[in-house]
Image: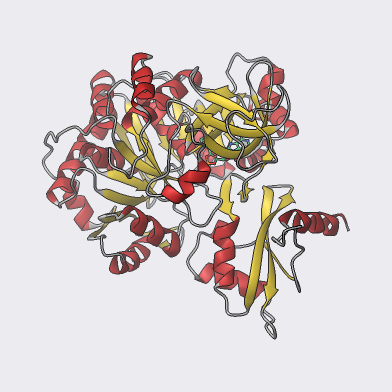
Length: 543
Ligand code: OOB
């Protein structure tokens, strides 16, 4: 592949092929084969603008073929990048498989992203188009996409699902297009990030399909299963852990929830007979509470996956009794590694760990947590807390076009520095105990401290900014921005929050709290001491 994609060393790739992990299949050919095997079964159920669509595998296959041909006719070529910003609408799967069949790479933006993030994704990926919806949850996505397209030279087209132009494109006569290289990049995912703007994560057909197949198996998906995508489907978790792609692989139906709240989810669990879904801990807590008063029949629900952020022991214990289902913990990352508790693991493991890796070839090193440059050789004694490094058959070796960042995010021998602090049990299960990276995990939504600091520092009255996590009962963590004003400046918290929001960023990145201070505590070498800022916050919280 090109220099954009840091490939696995040839001997490693050969091993992954010989072991049967990488099978030379593309997403397009996967859909062709499931459409043959399960033609008349339901593949997708979803709502857009209050209307429900229900498509079989054969219909999904045909829609994807038509969209692929329409995209090709409109000038989208193999290897072109297309920013996809779709909420949980039924068109998500036909569009994404259409792009794959045209050989294009979806760049998966989240519905919460706004102007500044879309601009960054489009610029960084040199996207040729943005594919989105019109108005959704009181935001005009099409208008934002057009504003970005007007400024980013590479973007030629904005395609809006539901518009007459898109409907025409999706009605193009289907035809076979050349299948892309299965070892090549299939799409770009987004990193939660810790330094500056989100990095783009190149995932190949070969590596991602391996994680999809194994996730479907580990979560016991069968053609009779019904998966509910409650979280935004473009995120790696509802996409592939086991997600809508795991469901598709198994011949099972995917139901896309327009919103993740208990009312919406319980309505769909009852009406569609949902058997499995995945949520983040705050949502699990909200569902547990709502289950006590619901009149909905949730009896089909068999497995609830919880992950994206740490699921505390108390919450873990309440899930089974409240929802009448089994708990499966999942600890994953868009960069690759995904760990699951297994459905036959002892209760103690299911309640108390975040699972073990998918693959026997997922290499795990728990290394010196005090040294950000620790290598894969600096392992801590068994059972002690350390920083998690990993490499394996579906974990990237580098971000897209990020040579400089890659030099620190990966070790010389190709391990990804996850930034997570873990302990490994003798059974090989991981317990996530904290984080070394400068990221706030707001109930599963990741906020890179530096990205928000840069937005704050663009304010004329702000001299310096430091964003840290504050413990939060509901979300696990929230963001607190410490701000030092310029001499004579006196910005208020409300002004700064509005300022950040008006710069066009996802709402979850707007600081929850703002503290204006005279100066920051500093470390021995004069760096801002975030540790002391966190300690000061904790002291305030205790009163
Ligand atoms: C998932 O993916 P990302 O890329 O949004 O975030 C990855 C990070 C991890 O490095 C870790 O810091 C945190 O999210 N995380 C967890 C966790 N699951 C993810 N921290 C503690 N306990 C857990 N169970 O969040 C993601 C991707 C695929 C499947 C599930 C989650």
